[in-house]
Image 1 (tube, one colour):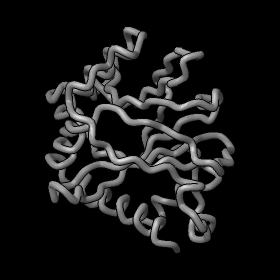
Image 2: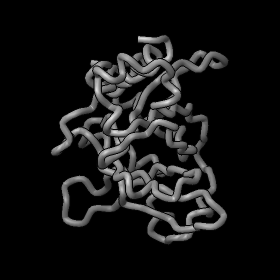
Image 3: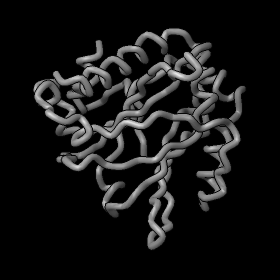
Image 4: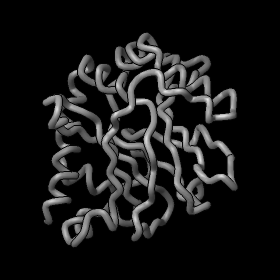
Length: 207
């Protein structure tokens, strides 16, 4: 495997370790609010895109920071990944340097705003982590990325009625094109559980 792929897999392996420490996860999640999404050039996709959590060291502060990796379900295959010549053709990675308080006013939908604000509430994050393990991947249907423009992804917490866990994590995708101001929410499925999708190659290689 080339060096870029090794770096991606190493960051996911680091997340696999970090997520065992809920206080550490809480601290990292508090530092995140949104991130840019660019689909890789060679994004052959059957049904879904997989958006992975990773962790890498910030060279300036010598502290951990979250990095997100985006890959199509077709490319998220261990045998294909091992043979990628250029990781950036298949995997989009972005370091999250957003801080609490990022203004969510760009999201027009009131429900989307509520979810974004809920993510920024420390008590809601703590409640979720007290009752649940940290998850690894968001899986989002390919039809939510058909406009072929830039996107913004916002972390959110969705209110659940009549469930043990009052809130559950969400990833809200907004098209970033001037011609299309539509806002999408409630699109993401968190993994695990992995459901009917059987292949998460980056996760397999990082374990």
